[in-house]
Length: 362
Image (tube, rainbow, N blue to C red; front, side):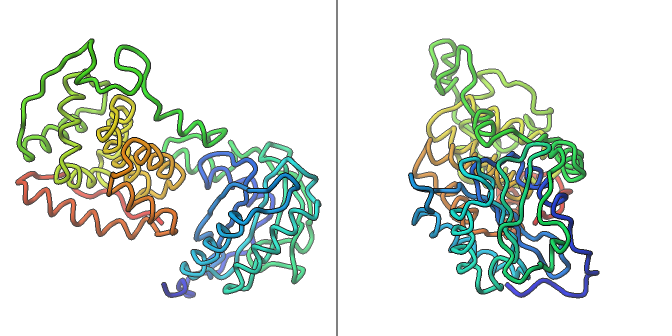
C-alpha cells in the first residue's frame, strides 16, 4: 500500500494526555494488561490503533508469542504506510519504570524498524481517571506525532467523557465497555425457554415446523424483518430467519444491509439471532454481525463476534476469511468488494436491496 497522501494539512503534535485518554474510545473498551500500538499517518492523524494482550511469563519476561505478535503488528503498520508508531503498555503487575517494560518496547522497536522503530513508549497501570502515565521509551528524545519534549509524565483524564469518546458515542451510540469480556457477554445465549444456545425451532417449548422456502422469498423475509425495526423475534421468526441466513446466497446478499439505513436494525437482528441459535445458525448470525462491525471500523466488536462464529462452527468459511483478514490488519475499506458482490447476488435473486447510505470506514 502506498504511503498516505502528504497534501493534507499537517496537524500539530498531539498532547500525550489527550492521546492516552482517548485510547479506550479508539478501541471501544478499556484495555487491561495490554500493549497498544498507535500508527500515525503523514498528517499526524491516527491511521490505526491495535491492541494485544501483554503476554509475560512468570518472571515478567515477554513470551515468544508476544514477540511474534509484535512482528505481525510491525508488518501491518508498514503496509499501512505509517510514518511513526507510538506504543503504550497498560499493566498493573510492575511499576511503570520497570525494566521489563522497556525490554518489551526494545523488542517492539526492532519489529517496527521498517518505519523507524517505536518513536515513543508510554506506561501506565490502568486507563482510570487520574491514572499516572510516564514516558519510558524515546530513543531520539522526541517524537514527531506526540509532544513529549516538555512533559514526560502526567495523569490521564476520564476516558468516558473525553472528546473522542463523546464523538464515538454520537456516531455509533456505543459507550466504552469496561472490558472486552462485556462484548462477549452481549453475545451469550439469552435466558429463558430457549436458553442454553438451543435452536428455538427445535426446543421443546416451541416445536416450530419451518416449510422449505426459496432463496428470493427468504431474502425478502429477512430484509422485511430488519426493516420492521429489529424488535424482539418470536420463535417462528427465528426458525425462518435461521433457514435464511444459513443459505449462502441469502447471507451474502444480506451483508449489504451493513452499509444502508437499516444498519442499526440489522445489528439488532443479527445480535438476537446469535443469542437465540446454536451451531451453524449461531455461526451464520455472528458472521453477519462481525462483518457489520468490521466494515464499520469496529474491529474489537468484529473480533469478538468472529470468535463466537468459529467456536459455534469451526468450518464457517466466511467467518474464517474475515478472521484471517482482521488478524492481518486488512482495512475495512477492502470489504467493500464484498458489498458489490452482495448487491450482485441480490439482483440475481430478483430482490431489490436498500441503497448504500453508509460511507466506507477506515
